[in-house]
Amino acid sequence: MLRLTNIEKEKYDEFVSTHKKKSHFLQSLSWGELALSKKNLTPHYLGLIDDKDNVVASALLLEKKLPLNKTYFYCPRGFVIDYNKDELVKEMTKELVKFCKKNKGIFLKIDPDIVYKSYNYLDEENKLDHNPDKIFKTLKEAKFKHLGFTKNFETSQPRYTFRIDMNQSLEDIESHFSKTTKQRISKADKLDTVVEIGDANDVKAFFELMMLTEDRKGFVSYGEDYYEELYKIFNKNKNTKATLFLGKIVFEKTIKALEDRLKEVNDQISILPIDNLSKSAKNKLNELMKQKDNIKNDIDKYKNYEKEYGKELLLSAHMIVSYGDKAWVLYAGNHNKLSETYVNYKTYYEHIKYCKENGVKIYDQFGTIGDLREDNPVIGLHEFKKKFGGDYIEFLGEFDYVIDPLMYFAFTKLVPFYRKIVKKKSKKELENEVRDIK
Image 1 (cartoon, rainbow, N blue to C red):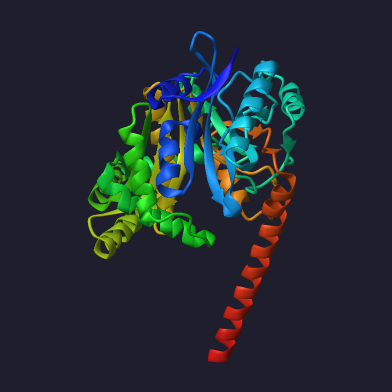
Image 2 (cartoon, one colour):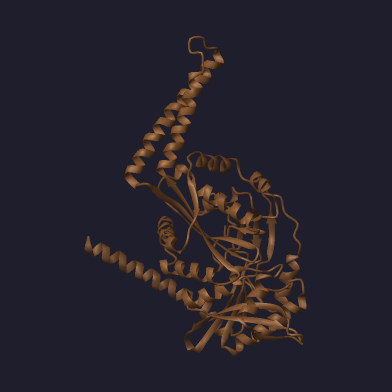
């Protein structure tokens, strides 16, 4: 007989981190601790236990307190379970719903890490090792309500992503990069740009780039203390790790690289027989002279940058989280200056290499879109991530198990409608205030 219980944190995290199919950082002990510390959510580390006291399935439930002594529960990326076992999924659902009812839950939300469709870098559909339609049917039979096949970022977690299979050789991974990506990484290398691994002292600089990036997008998600806490928690616990990759330009190094390249070009010019040039040699000379002028201009440009910005400038900062044998590009901030150095591309390349060298099996770029119209405001994000040649993944989406239909309707329909009205009213009042000032 199976029973659901709160299990000891270390036992819980060991089960999740080593699960062969459904290990995910959003089900980790660390994510639960961060949710408690920074999101005002209460974590419950639950396990389905068999007669021999073995954990056969688990779930991190995040509890959100609501008015009228009600709550709702969210299980990010779904149960850690073998979804091919229909009866086990149904039993887990039944036991979790009992738990939610006992704690005055009005609904339980899941968004399982189940791939619905997958396409390789050539846009060819990949064969899956599971039947998503069968799993979808099982969840429906367990009385979950599917919230639709959304196309953008409407859901709690992205319904689309790009993933790189790190079981390939690094050479094979690189061969799937777009031509443009390879060229831009090469340019960043030629400028001798630097990618370093940071520490806790660099979270502030990382946050500043996040602010610049989010300001360009018109929103701000978290404060500096959130990233500090995430970094601390993920590096404190045994099975998780947060790594900061810092892409920068050190002007002295870049200028030296350009000066070395200028010397090479001058040496090539010096060996040409200037007085007796063939047609091809003339063309070669003209090309070398153009390169020489361009390099000299670049040297002057980067010397001026050095005067403006100092010895170095941080241009790209990415936070990668790893759990078990997987890694996710969770946050990325980029400067709005010196984009022509392509440090962002090199930073991505360096943490792909790092993950490969450190035994990561799946590298997840954590979020893209399914609406690929040219006028989609975030199509650029999609195209950028696609250039690194990962598999284009679509998940099953969100499911709600409705426990209290009346309260569920109020919370999911009426409250958002009310907030929308208040938001519009506040915006109108602000516009009126500005008009009055004028």
